Amino acid sequence: MAQWGNTDDAANSVIWASESVNQPANTANRNALFGNTTANAYFDGVTVGQYGVDTDEMAAARDAGDPKPPHAGWVLKTEGSGGRAGRTTYETLVAMGTMSGDAEDGSFPDLNIRILTQPQDDSANSASDEQATFTVETTSVPSGSLTFLWQYTANTSDLETFSTTVGEDGFSGQTTATLTADANTIADGTLVRVVVSGGGDSVTSDSAELTVT
Image (cartoon, rainbow, N blue to C red):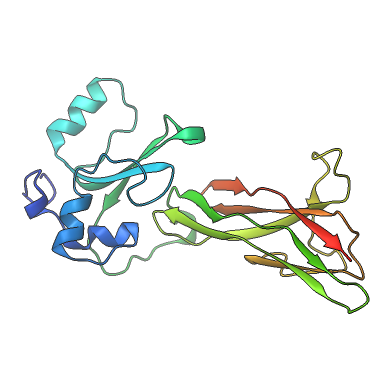
């Protein structure tokens, strides 16, 4: 490798790379990640593998017309499938302590967000002053900070009418992974969904329905 003088071999790879896919940093996980081409091995919908890239490989990629070839050193290659088919990203794996600089020089990772558990329909009784709960479970490659914004619509015949729940009476947790809806305030049949964002990517969940009894 140009960056550390290593070769394209799992035995010479950085052991902490497996932490990038939420696996313990050990030899077995490092070896499994290196050169991995099995889809969904770590996250549904993506193929993640660690690779070594030297300066010759960078030059060859650039000569082949790749405007953004991977950097020399160890990289984490992520290839999307399904709705993300054809999208390939490279994350450079660098060992370092901390980095500081001017705020305008900050950079953000290109996250690939996945929804693990979609919000489910829920019911609440208005006479008992109950609240319905809607929750989403997510992950991202690489692991990063995600934001949540819940939306709602009472017009189930037109799903283009979703509006933000922020500032709307009867909702709480509008910018968290869990939204609650007050059965005394929110109408029966209201649909909710959440937009999950981070690192320039965003994913919208399926809709879930509130039933008021």
